[in-house]
Amino acid sequence: MRRVLITDNAHPVLSERIEAAGYGCHVMEPCDYDSVLAAVQDYDALVVRSKIVIDRNFIDHASHLCCIGRVGAGMETIDVDYAERRGIRCLNSPEGNRDAVGEHAVGLLLALFDNIARADSEVRQGLWQREANRGLEVQGHTIGIIGFGNMGGAFAMRLQGFGCEIVAYDKYKPSGYAPRYVREVTLAELQSCADVVSLHVPLTDETHYLFGDDFVAGMGKPFYLINTSRGAVVDTAALVRAMQGGSVLGAALDVIEYEDMTKDGMGGAAVPEPLRWLRASKHTVLTPHVAGWTVESKYKLAAVLADKIVACLQDHDGEGSACHNNTTV
Image (tube, rainbow, N blue to C red; front, top):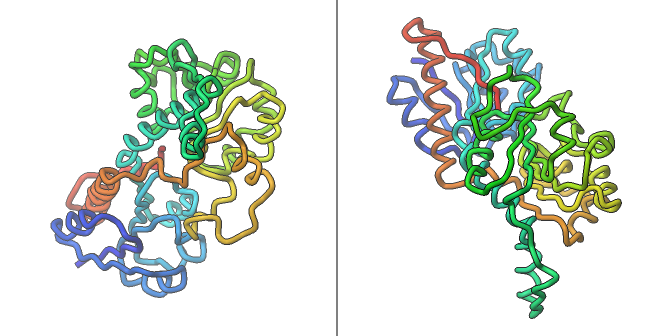
Protein backbone atom coordinates (compact mmCIF):
# COMPACT_ATOMS: atom_id res chain seq x y z
CA MET A 1 0.00 0.00 0.00
CA ARG A 2 1.25 3.44 -0.90
CA ARG A 3 1.44 5.81 2.06
CA VAL A 4 1.04 9.56 2.53
CA LEU A 5 2.71 11.57 5.30
CA ILE A 6 0.76 14.65 6.46
CA THR A 7 2.79 17.15 8.48
CA ASP A 8 0.26 19.78 9.46
CA ASN A 9 -3.17 20.22 10.95
CA ALA A 10 -5.19 19.99 7.75
CA HIS A 11 -8.92 19.31 7.66
CA PRO A 12 -9.70 15.58 8.18
CA VAL A 13 -11.18 15.40 4.68
CA LEU A 14 -7.60 15.26 3.39
CA SER A 15 -6.82 11.89 4.97
CA GLU A 16 -10.41 10.64 4.54
CA ARG A 17 -10.34 11.06 0.76
CA ILE A 18 -6.85 9.61 0.42
CA GLU A 19 -7.76 6.57 2.53
CA ALA A 20 -11.04 6.12 0.64
CA ALA A 21 -8.95 5.77 -2.52
CA GLY A 22 -7.05 2.88 -0.95
CA TYR A 23 -3.92 4.62 0.30
CA GLY A 24 -2.55 4.83 3.81
CA CYS A 25 -2.18 8.10 5.75
CA HIS A 26 -0.10 9.09 8.75
CA VAL A 27 -0.33 12.47 10.45
CA MET A 28 2.90 13.68 12.08
CA GLU A 29 2.27 16.64 14.36
CA PRO A 30 4.07 18.36 15.89
CA CYS A 31 7.09 17.91 13.68
CA ASP A 32 10.17 19.72 12.43
CA TYR A 33 12.54 19.47 9.49
CA ASP A 34 14.68 16.73 11.02
CA SER A 35 11.81 14.51 12.15
CA VAL A 36 10.11 14.69 8.76
CA LEU A 37 13.40 14.07 6.99
CA ALA A 38 13.99 10.95 9.08
CA ALA A 39 10.55 9.56 8.25
CA VAL A 40 9.97 10.58 4.66
CA GLN A 41 11.70 7.62 3.02
CA ASP A 42 8.85 5.39 4.16
CA TYR A 43 6.26 7.38 2.20
CA ASP A 44 5.17 7.91 -1.39
CA ALA A 45 3.59 11.35 -0.92
CA LEU A 46 4.19 14.20 1.48
CA VAL A 47 1.81 16.98 2.55
CA VAL A 48 3.29 20.17 4.03
CA ARG A 49 2.53 23.75 4.91
CA SER A 50 5.14 26.48 5.08
CA LYS A 51 6.70 25.44 8.40
CA ILE A 52 8.83 22.74 6.75
CA VAL A 53 11.25 24.00 4.10
CA ILE A 54 11.66 21.42 1.34
CA ASP A 55 15.19 22.13 0.11
CA ARG A 56 17.61 20.16 -2.05
CA ASN A 57 18.98 18.23 0.88
CA PHE A 58 15.47 17.11 1.82
CA ILE A 59 14.59 16.18 -1.75
CA ASP A 60 17.79 14.15 -2.14
CA HIS A 61 16.77 12.09 0.91
CA ALA A 62 13.15 11.67 -0.20
CA SER A 63 13.95 9.01 -2.74
CA HIS A 64 10.53 7.31 -2.71
CA LEU A 65 8.32 10.37 -3.09
CA CYS A 66 6.22 10.74 -6.19
CA CYS A 67 4.56 13.98 -5.06
CA ILE A 68 4.72 16.81 -2.53
CA GLY A 69 1.45 18.56 -1.73
CA ARG A 70 1.09 22.04 -0.27
CA VAL A 71 -2.05 22.83 1.72
CA GLY A 72 -2.43 26.31 0.28
CA ALA A 73 -1.20 28.32 -2.67
CA GLY A 74 2.33 29.61 -2.09
CA MET A 75 5.17 27.27 -3.06
CA GLU A 76 8.15 29.42 -2.06
CA THR A 77 9.20 27.04 0.75
CA ILE A 78 9.55 24.16 -1.74
CA ASP A 79 12.35 23.94 -4.29
CA VAL A 80 9.85 23.08 -7.02
CA ASP A 81 12.29 23.09 -9.94
CA TYR A 82 14.70 20.70 -8.24
CA ALA A 83 11.93 18.41 -7.02
CA GLU A 84 10.42 18.10 -10.46
CA ARG A 85 13.82 17.46 -12.00
CA ARG A 86 14.03 14.53 -9.59
CA GLY A 87 10.66 13.27 -10.80
CA ILE A 88 8.59 14.51 -7.83
CA ARG A 89 5.31 16.25 -8.67
CA CYS A 90 4.61 19.46 -6.74
CA LEU A 91 0.96 20.19 -6.06
CA ASN A 92 -0.91 23.01 -4.34
CA SER A 93 -4.56 23.96 -3.82
CA PRO A 94 -5.20 27.65 -4.57
CA GLU A 95 -8.71 26.76 -5.71
CA GLY A 96 -9.48 26.02 -2.06
CA ASN A 97 -8.94 29.49 -0.63
CA ARG A 98 -9.42 31.81 -3.58
CA ASP A 99 -12.95 32.70 -2.45
CA ALA A 100 -11.70 33.59 1.03
CA VAL A 101 -8.89 35.75 -0.38
CA GLY A 102 -11.22 37.50 -2.82
CA GLU A 103 -13.65 38.40 -0.03
CA HIS A 104 -10.89 39.48 2.35
CA ALA A 105 -9.39 41.76 -0.30
CA VAL A 106 -12.77 43.44 -0.73
CA GLY A 107 -12.93 43.87 3.04
CA LEU A 108 -9.51 45.49 3.07
CA LEU A 109 -10.54 47.83 0.26
CA LEU A 110 -13.65 48.93 2.14
CA ALA A 111 -11.69 49.31 5.37
CA LEU A 112 -9.28 51.65 3.58
CA PHE A 113 -11.89 53.71 1.78
CA ASP A 114 -14.26 54.04 4.74
CA ASN A 115 -11.69 54.34 7.55
CA ILE A 116 -13.40 51.43 9.30
CA ALA A 117 -10.54 50.27 11.50
CA ARG A 118 -9.57 53.79 12.52
CA ALA A 119 -13.14 54.84 13.28
CA ASP A 120 -13.74 51.69 15.33
CA SER A 121 -10.65 52.38 17.43
CA GLU A 122 -11.71 55.99 17.99
CA VAL A 123 -15.25 55.14 19.04
CA ARG A 124 -13.88 52.63 21.55
CA GLN A 125 -11.85 55.50 23.01
CA GLY A 126 -14.95 57.69 23.32
CA LEU A 127 -14.22 59.76 20.20
CA TRP A 128 -16.99 60.58 17.71
CA GLN A 129 -15.26 62.09 14.68
CA ARG A 130 -17.59 61.97 11.72
CA GLU A 131 -16.03 64.50 9.37
CA ALA A 132 -12.51 63.18 10.00
CA ASN A 133 -13.75 59.75 8.92
CA ARG A 134 -15.63 60.78 5.79
CA GLY A 135 -14.95 57.96 3.35
CA LEU A 136 -14.73 57.24 -0.36
CA GLU A 137 -17.03 55.19 -2.56
CA VAL A 138 -15.54 52.37 -4.62
CA GLN A 139 -17.80 53.35 -7.51
CA GLY A 140 -16.00 55.52 -10.04
CA HIS A 141 -12.51 54.41 -9.02
CA THR A 142 -10.12 52.20 -10.97
CA ILE A 143 -8.90 49.03 -9.26
CA GLY A 144 -5.69 47.59 -10.69
CA ILE A 145 -5.04 43.88 -10.13
CA ILE A 146 -1.51 42.56 -10.63
CA GLY A 147 -1.58 38.80 -11.09
CA PHE A 148 -4.79 37.30 -12.46
CA GLY A 149 -4.70 33.72 -11.25
CA ASN A 150 -7.10 32.17 -8.76
CA MET A 151 -6.80 34.98 -6.21
CA GLY A 152 -6.80 37.97 -8.55
CA GLY A 153 -9.70 36.53 -10.49
CA ALA A 154 -11.72 35.92 -7.31
CA PHE A 155 -11.16 39.52 -6.19
CA ALA A 156 -12.23 40.87 -9.58
CA MET A 157 -15.39 38.77 -9.59
CA ARG A 158 -16.47 40.28 -6.28
CA LEU A 159 -15.82 43.83 -7.46
CA GLN A 160 -18.38 43.63 -10.28
CA GLY A 161 -21.25 45.10 -8.33
CA PHE A 162 -19.36 48.15 -7.06
CA GLY A 163 -19.49 50.16 -10.28
CA CYS A 164 -15.71 50.53 -10.50
CA GLU A 165 -13.38 49.99 -13.44
CA ILE A 166 -11.27 46.85 -13.06
CA VAL A 167 -7.97 46.55 -14.92
CA ALA A 168 -5.59 43.61 -14.74
CA TYR A 169 -1.99 42.86 -15.61
CA ASP A 170 -0.54 39.36 -15.74
CA LYS A 171 2.82 38.90 -17.41
CA TYR A 172 2.44 35.15 -17.77
CA LYS A 173 -1.00 34.87 -19.36
CA PRO A 174 -1.76 35.18 -23.08
CA SER A 175 -4.25 37.84 -24.09
CA GLY A 176 -7.89 36.98 -23.58
CA TYR A 177 -7.52 35.66 -20.03
CA ALA A 178 -9.81 38.18 -18.33
CA PRO A 179 -13.63 38.06 -18.21
CA ARG A 180 -15.67 40.76 -19.91
CA TYR A 181 -15.86 42.97 -16.82
CA VAL A 182 -12.05 43.25 -16.58
CA ARG A 183 -9.85 45.21 -18.98
CA GLU A 184 -6.47 43.65 -19.72
CA VAL A 185 -3.66 46.20 -19.70
CA THR A 186 0.09 46.47 -19.62
CA LEU A 187 1.82 47.25 -16.34
CA ALA A 188 2.47 50.80 -17.53
CA GLU A 189 -1.20 51.27 -18.40
CA LEU A 190 -2.26 49.96 -15.00
CA GLN A 191 0.14 52.33 -13.27
CA SER A 192 -1.17 55.27 -15.26
CA CYS A 193 -4.83 54.82 -14.28
CA ALA A 194 -5.14 52.84 -11.04
CA ASP A 195 -6.50 54.40 -7.86
CA VAL A 196 -5.92 51.10 -6.03
CA VAL A 197 -3.24 48.47 -6.70
CA SER A 198 -3.94 44.97 -5.40
CA LEU A 199 -1.15 42.38 -5.52
CA HIS A 200 -1.95 38.72 -6.25
CA VAL A 201 1.35 37.18 -7.34
CA PRO A 202 3.46 34.30 -5.99
CA LEU A 203 6.77 35.09 -4.32
CA THR A 204 9.58 34.37 -6.77
CA ASP A 205 12.95 35.92 -7.55
CA GLU A 206 11.17 38.08 -10.11
CA THR A 207 8.39 39.30 -7.81
CA HIS A 208 10.56 39.91 -4.75
CA TYR A 209 10.23 43.66 -4.08
CA LEU A 210 8.01 44.04 -7.12
CA PHE A 211 6.59 46.99 -5.23
CA GLY A 212 9.43 49.40 -4.52
CA ASP A 213 10.63 52.91 -5.26
CA ASP A 214 10.64 52.35 -9.02
CA PHE A 215 7.09 51.01 -9.00
CA VAL A 216 5.86 54.02 -7.04
CA ALA A 217 7.69 56.40 -9.36
CA GLY A 218 5.88 54.83 -12.31
CA MET A 219 2.41 55.46 -10.89
CA GLY A 220 0.39 58.22 -12.51
CA LYS A 221 -1.30 59.52 -9.34
CA PRO A 222 -1.50 58.88 -5.59
CA PHE A 223 -3.03 55.47 -4.89
CA TYR A 224 -3.92 52.85 -2.28
CA LEU A 225 -2.12 49.51 -1.92
CA ILE A 226 -3.58 46.12 -1.01
CA ASN A 227 -1.34 43.09 -0.54
CA THR A 228 -2.75 39.63 0.15
CA SER A 229 0.01 37.72 -1.67
CA ARG A 230 3.37 37.53 0.13
CA GLY A 231 5.05 40.11 2.32
CA ALA A 232 8.34 40.24 0.46
CA VAL A 233 6.57 41.29 -2.75
CA VAL A 234 6.53 44.73 -1.10
CA ASP A 235 9.64 46.62 -0.04
CA THR A 236 8.29 47.86 3.28
CA ALA A 237 10.78 50.69 3.62
CA ALA A 238 9.84 51.92 0.14
CA LEU A 239 6.16 51.73 1.07
CA VAL A 240 6.77 53.87 4.15
CA ARG A 241 8.67 56.43 2.08
CA ALA A 242 5.81 56.54 -0.41
CA MET A 243 3.23 57.03 2.32
CA GLN A 244 5.28 59.73 3.99
CA GLY A 245 5.65 61.51 0.65
CA GLY A 246 1.96 61.23 -0.23
CA SER A 247 2.34 58.90 -3.21
CA VAL A 248 0.56 56.09 -1.34
CA LEU A 249 -2.60 57.28 0.41
CA GLY A 250 -3.14 54.12 2.44
CA ALA A 251 -2.08 50.48 2.62
CA ALA A 252 -3.95 47.33 3.60
CA LEU A 253 -1.55 44.45 4.25
CA ASP A 254 -2.50 40.90 5.14
CA VAL A 255 1.16 39.87 4.79
CA ILE A 256 4.30 41.56 6.08
CA GLU A 257 7.81 41.34 4.67
CA TYR A 258 9.22 40.41 8.09
CA GLU A 259 6.93 37.44 8.66
CA ASP A 260 8.73 34.15 9.34
CA MET A 261 6.64 31.58 7.48
CA THR A 262 8.33 28.68 9.23
CA LYS A 263 7.34 30.03 12.66
CA ASP A 264 3.89 31.35 11.77
CA GLY A 265 4.59 34.89 12.90
CA MET A 266 7.37 37.39 13.39
CA GLY A 267 9.70 34.82 14.90
CA GLY A 268 10.42 36.88 18.02
CA ALA A 269 12.72 39.27 16.17
CA ALA A 270 12.94 42.96 17.02
CA VAL A 271 10.34 45.02 15.19
CA PRO A 272 11.97 46.82 12.24
CA GLU A 273 11.47 50.58 12.04
CA PRO A 274 9.34 50.47 8.83
CA LEU A 275 6.92 48.08 10.50
CA ARG A 276 6.75 50.24 13.63
CA TRP A 277 5.81 53.16 11.39
CA LEU A 278 3.08 51.17 9.65
CA ARG A 279 1.67 50.03 12.99
CA ALA A 280 1.43 53.62 14.20
CA SER A 281 -0.05 55.03 11.00
CA LYS A 282 -3.75 55.94 10.78
CA HIS A 283 -3.69 55.07 7.10
CA THR A 284 -2.94 51.35 7.34
CA VAL A 285 -5.05 48.23 7.86
CA LEU A 286 -3.07 45.18 9.01
CA THR A 287 -4.22 41.56 9.35
CA PRO A 288 -2.11 38.52 10.36
CA HIS A 289 -1.95 36.53 7.09
CA VAL A 290 -5.54 35.36 7.36
CA ALA A 291 -6.98 36.38 3.98
CA GLY A 292 -7.26 32.73 2.96
CA TRP A 293 -8.21 31.39 6.41
CA THR A 294 -11.91 30.70 6.76
CA VAL A 295 -13.87 27.74 8.08
CA GLU A 296 -14.86 26.93 4.52
CA SER A 297 -11.39 27.30 3.02
CA LYS A 298 -9.86 24.90 5.53
CA TYR A 299 -12.13 22.19 4.14
CA LYS A 300 -11.74 23.18 0.50
CA LEU A 301 -7.94 23.46 0.63
CA ALA A 302 -7.70 19.92 1.98
CA ALA A 303 -10.33 18.45 -0.33
CA VAL A 304 -8.80 19.93 -3.48
CA LEU A 305 -5.32 18.76 -2.52
CA ALA A 306 -6.56 15.28 -1.62
CA ASP A 307 -8.05 14.82 -5.07
CA LYS A 308 -4.82 15.94 -6.72
CA ILE A 309 -2.70 13.60 -4.59
CA VAL A 310 -4.99 10.64 -5.30
CA ALA A 311 -4.83 11.37 -9.04
CA CYS A 312 -1.06 11.60 -8.88
CA LEU A 313 -0.69 8.32 -6.97
CA GLN A 314 -3.07 6.61 -9.37
CA ASP A 315 -1.09 7.95 -12.29
CA HIS A 316 2.08 6.63 -10.69
CA ASP A 317 0.37 3.25 -10.36
CA GLY A 318 -0.70 3.41 -13.99
CA GLU A 319 -4.40 3.38 -13.02
CA GLY A 320 -5.59 6.91 -13.64
CA SER A 321 -5.21 10.02 -15.69
CA ALA A 322 -2.15 12.23 -15.55
CA CYS A 323 -1.78 14.58 -12.61
CA HIS A 324 -0.93 18.08 -13.76
CA ASN A 325 1.17 20.42 -11.66
CA ASN A 326 -0.62 23.45 -10.27
CA THR A 327 1.50 26.22 -8.85
CA THR A 328 -0.62 29.20 -9.80
CA VAL A 329 -2.04 31.62 -7.24
